[in-house]
Image 1 (cartoon, rainbow, N blue to C red):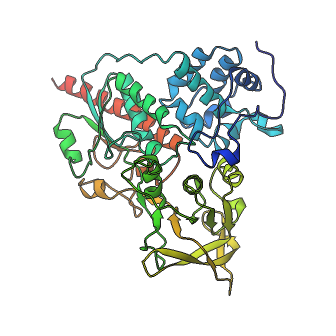
Image 2: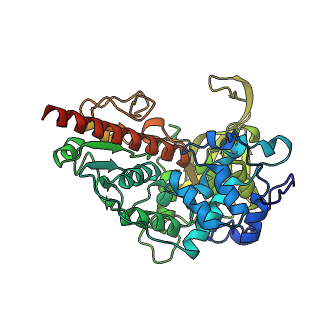
Length: 472
């Protein structure tokens, strides 16, 4: 039994200095060394009730993998992780652990929680660098499933079904698999090679990925069934950006955060030889307070903007972004204009953004979400000098699939309606999960939905096969 580390503080993880990292797209956090990981793992009390595990959407046996780390058995720790998650290197970097596993850690009652995310990242990175054994292809069970969308939910479902021997084909609308992992999350938070490596592992298990396949345009869901698929899982995400509807949003220099980040992350617009240009901005306003807003603001700073503002209508305490991302943004020089709301974007004679008219806000009574409602302060209008505006106030599912799939029930927000348990939709054999069902949410929640849907699809197909055998 490894000796316990009773420190109330997590082992610090090395990172690039703020004044260095805000000028490059290299990963900010540098990761634990083996010695650091072992020291941090010894902080885990290995609670018999495992409250951290119950808070994990994919139900990783967290105490078990951490105990292996504490003993220096990193390969065994990785095996435990892979039993529950298809993307451990991704989860260790982008999961909001503070609201999930780490939020339930008993060490957080007095002091800081165990750094579960950092340990997961360490184990996945160690395995990739030191062993990196290609998974073998399971024996086929002669059943076929189609998955729409190669983001975290679709990839998780594909991995779970492939383990069971299914012939799985993932249809991705873009030219590269990964979904939000490649087009949305910047390189400095999630290196794209990590995503590529995880996808190669899925391919080695027999998963086929068809890119440039827009379902609803190239093929319909009915076509997928006609091709011999016995079930379809819709994991197409929520990539349709929202705007405020204020004057000036059609000016040159106004981006949705989705477009801005896609140009940078997927199309490498920051490189001199990129075929997808991006504006060289001086002063940038990012409207919104979530993780995507932080990603856009920090990317704009790295592209050379002198001043980057987060414009958010509530206060710092109400920011929905991860605390770590907010802290990193502040360290990198991002200016937070909280209790501020834009009312107009105005342009110059060339139709380019020349400024943003804003009003100051104050917080009133709580609304239906439980947060205090922002109210405009009278006579508080002012102008923010910006030449670029990035809207990051949320996204909704693309209407293409629902408009081309008869009998598929959706709600007023355009999200696919399911049974809320395992992703079953109003169409037999059609399941859905992730942001296509919930609207924009986290990577790990999307993965949890993919895992649940894969189990349900397996049960559905096996039951259907048993019924057919009984008839014969």
